[in-house]
Image (tube, rainbow, N blue to C red):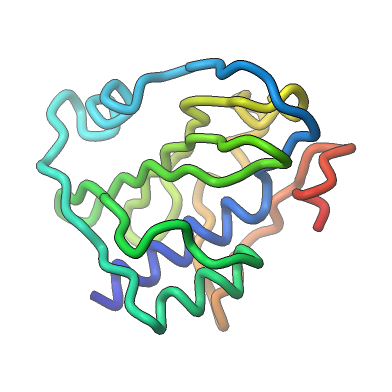
Length: 158
């Protein structure tokens, strides 16, 4: 369970580092969640599992994101030491759906699946997302590398 709590905190830390955008708009679907999972597990995603956010995990996620989690449980997919997470987090005004793959306690890759903001869409490009590869949690829930934000994206700067 501590393994999953650490992965949830890693994902929350990364979400808090870069999701943002100033105004609302229609959603852009870049990759369906099912397609993300199929690709993450080489064609066959395992059955989903559920991480229940205990009071301690809720407190840690709240500290990282600056607000309480929207739900008390989080679905994830696990096979060996690889897990996949599909999360929604508010940008400036709208939710952004992102997929994260963690392997061996480090971020393997991330994808923006659905984007609903009018600006800040650069977070979906591989040139931006590659900075997340290899990032892990160290010390007191700190990231092992700096995650740059998008210029002019107020929430990510904060």
